[in-house]
Length: 315
Image (cartoon, rainbow, N blue to C red):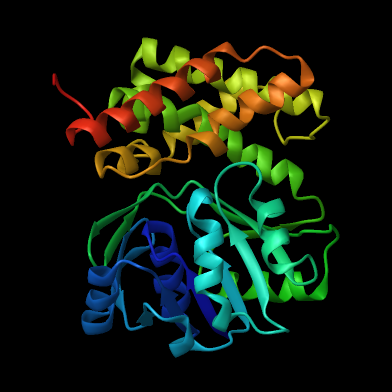
């Protein structure tokens, strides 16, 4: 299958490398010139839970070089979606299936406005803990699951066909007829670890071992779970704290992408994660004080790094 990956950061490069190693024609599209050039010259190296491989795939700064693909996977940060999709237009033909695999709330709706509902699929990746080691080189701590669904619901032949492509590459894949539990299940995982790891500089396992950090993590998760219950989202677990601790124990060395973003001086997805929980809670009249607090603390760190060039340490 001819597959375009829009946003060849840590996760996008993991997808592209593993899918390419399975014999698919993969095109990685990104705006990071050094990364694209490294992949062009040496291939993309993917190491971690799936092994250690260097795969020759296509990489480009210009979507016209790739042309229309059968499947386009959007793996950008939420705030970069509009610009990335516009840049990727030459890859999206009338019959192209578009699969958004992104963190946070609102991505499916945003993608629907950009590409329409007809050929839109929604995916959730769980338990990867991916990071960029160097241009052309990515690492992932786990690869627990890829969950896929149709935007409009139901399990279709095309959904099964796309799932089979990922399965043949070695991913653990399940398809679902309702995407909302997938979105909220992943959201709660991100809400648990992303902000507190960013604020403290701790990895996932270190948060679990630190009673004060883990108490913040657990409060964030309980608040998000309460919002999901109020929205009648049917999650696969009844105890969010037990679930988040089990989830985190599988990727103890992971640094959430939000922490990686502030360390690199980039904007974070806080508004689509903990900030989104706060917005949803306010609409429902439910308190979410811990998510409210950590959202503002992460924003304070973003502003600090813009002002002084570093996120931690005394100014």
